[in-house]
Image 1 (cartoon, rainbow, N blue to C red):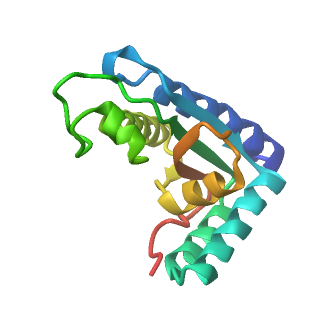
Image 2: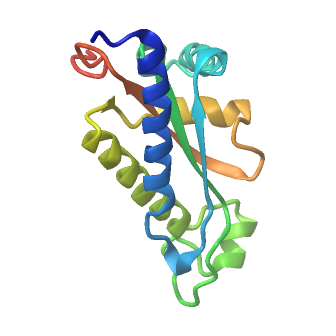
Length: 175
């Protein structure tokens, strides 16, 4: 039986859901769940790729344009973001500030928010690997999604994970 494109599309969405579940169940500091996930396809994914190209020109970052081509060559894009909300740990200072209040006043980010998101991203791409789906963590896709406001105003840190099911990974030999 040949695999038709509709079956691949349905399968990639089911896989993306499992990838988001893996991110959701990742450990979090003090058990505080600040993770926001989304699965993007079609026009919304094209909007992200377009914004990536705009950023490439605006900020003179060629790799954003290269990554935009990778997003366009993908079947789906998983977005993983974190809301900014300090954990309020006394005597922490991991963010570089004396305390959470000073960090907030300076517009900083709680290191636990970033760390928890990193653990969630690791869980997500591990699940993608378990499913033998080509993927790559992209700050560039996350930055474009963030600028487009796709995960809401409260989300301040985003990574994108494009997913590909093809004969050759578009994320290999990227130059």
